[in-house]
Image (cartoon, rainbow, N blue to C red; front, side):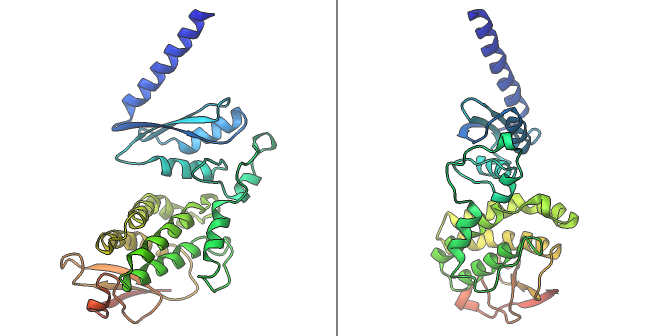
Length: 280
């Protein structure tokens, strides 16, 4: 029995080593992901794995997962978000209730926390967004766009604290997008911009330095424009441009108002810029 045990340990070690060899800049972390059975294991690992970028190994007995990933291309949060979107909670991210409810009965594990990320986000914003919420069938991205506009307004005011708060809310909104419910064109664009949106939102959240926030807002706005072009929205959206931003190279942003209010300079050059496209 002892010899068999040592063989199994050696096999696992060789498997991990082989995985590390395939993934460059490999880092490894252990996290708890809730689930019940072998079917859960298959779904969790499939959701988290990306060839040569991320590898997930989940243990049914301990509920612990080993995340091995290329640190230059992804991070544990991105991996755990994908797993949450497949129906499985971690201590960092909770699965949307609707996705959890669709899991097979044998996979419906006992949920430690009863409030999903989506519900927490809604409570946080119930006094900030006065419009009636749009259903996900109409436009899953409405809350994402609304929060982006709030972030833009905070930068117009040169308010780094408020910008950080809205960036955190934006991350929560991005986290609850259900890819399976997206139209084909939306899904294709979402897969292209998702990681970069999360990357920039995280950087804006992590600092109250408005200059640094504005640097990331440039690329955030570019990807948000791409997403908005592929999505439905009830009102016109104005794609605006400031030639002075980005060290004279220029930078764009999106606004619900046709009047220019520059998020890159605030009151210093509030009306610097122009509308270059109207999205309808």
